[in-house]
Image (cartoon, rainbow, N blue to C red; front, side, top):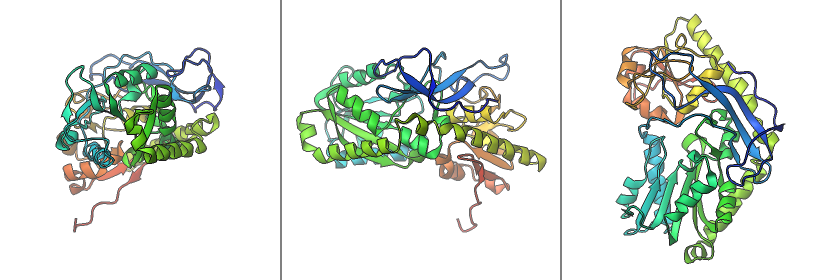
Length: 394
């Protein structure tokens, strides 16, 4: 179990900004030693699982929030695309088409994310075709992918190499402003190198000759944002001046909310202590009441939460997950076994902790046996809350 988060403004010793290369910054969130969130050990693998420092740094020069260091080796099993991501992709494509930024008959290229989810199917349904390898794309899309680039400048430049002269780059991110507003401290994890937002994307785009031409908001993960860019001075940018003004206004709102203020971002530390203590108290109460508790969603955000709360397989009998790549393995650190959804149902748990609240409607519909046998779903963010059972009419 980690100690409390360090105060904001703590100086750092060795570090270079992943965007501007600056060497001055402050640690705004420190989770201590944490297991790698994409390392899912087998039950008989020798322990303890390796742990590494996990800290968020705010660059003093450009204001980018980022992972200080990552000594882990990326080996993340591909996630299964949940309905919430499918719906968000459809909404984003609808918005791009409606704005005239995704046009039938044109070429699209996608930079994917290991979390699952693709926009290619709804884009194909809208009449776009996949660009061939090396072929310029009229639309380049990236949903939750750019944060996985250790070199942020190099990663963005790679996306620009695919972009046609009058093309559009659409970036979908989980903004730092959302993370701070919702207290979602466990968005910090190894492999997530940058914590972006409209303000940071607008600045990064400007440095590479891009102008924002639209911004849209979605309810996923407490609030995500898509920002579309075109080359500054080009015909697309000139035709979407309203989108440019909207993006600049959204960027100003984020700055006013304190996304570049170490003290403001550092308030995430208080949520670490509070949510860890709340989960620990809930599980202790469930054990005292003789309840069997399981979890659902072997997501990266669950790993640090379980570590902070000191959770082990003594507290959770299993965690269900739809990804075949994770089944038969364990969550790192806690060593809670990962099972298929049908195996979770067979355990007849009294309570099921849902580690990704956006999946509630989906898993509830897919696994009615949980409530049918008297169990209850429990949303764990920001603290454990038992979900009222569906009424008989539903």
